[in-house]
Length: 387
Image (cartoon, rainbow, N blue to C red; front, side):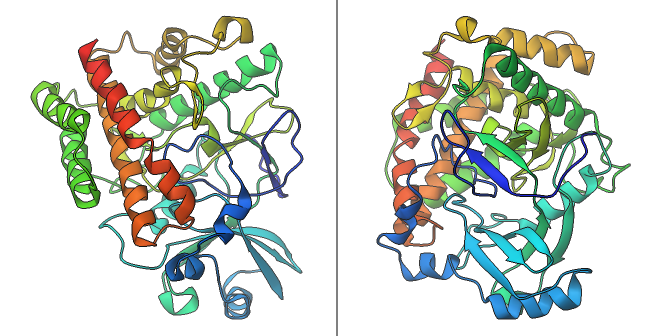
């Protein structure tokens, strides 16, 4: 397991890694960093509240609850993080990352920071690289909502799967590290690390299809024929449960990972808000959507990228390597898993759009911009069905 180092998380945004920031970005199909100052524009009261924390109250609490912590502290909200507001904390005792539930009326089961904390704490005992968890506060009187504090991880986050910052050898290494960590996650025994009750085993796709259909209906703002096509097709073509159960991340993608600055290894997988006990192929299919998404405008995929020239494995090669690590053969029902992934992501982004319209998003302007992706994702999912 990689040795984790304390320090500043730096986000790679171009050919170099100059602009430091930190934190996990929410599950919204985000494609690029965007302009950090967007969160200062047209900020609603709820968004303004999400961007603020009482540093004096927090410092008093951490001095009593977190061994070794010393105030005073400053808190800087990261420009990313549509789902759970994330803050960079700087204090006399060092730097930390804080993630909290947003204010306002929230969809049921969303923004589960307690689950994020719990799953990363458990996985700290395995070969899955995660930040070290320091403290979970479930008392809303401290900051208004639940929050947790974790260590910094010193590394880079890559936002473009084409990895223009790297040479071919390092691109291949980054993809192999993603593959390795995914297989390690799906090989971890939930019971051994105290997560046997982290979800209901079995019938994962049936339960998830029902959940995200309800979530989509709750946040629906317009009729989309392609979403209706996917909902009907998934209901009619769901394969029989094969009994596979593992921990799943739920948003396993390149920009939810922190790599060493030389891109030699994966240091931490972050943003575990959607994690649960589920079917391992859901994570694999979700990640493999990037091979079908374009690399232009608001999206950063691999569909129109010369992968061979860049040394990036094909979707088939990536799946084959995963199967090798998991000691399994070919994956059946791949069309279903991919279609489900497009539907689920579209439903998630629709929820972000709705929060933006209602002023509850961490960054309302960016949330509304992300909402433009919903019909695009729906059309791509319907396209997978059409073959």
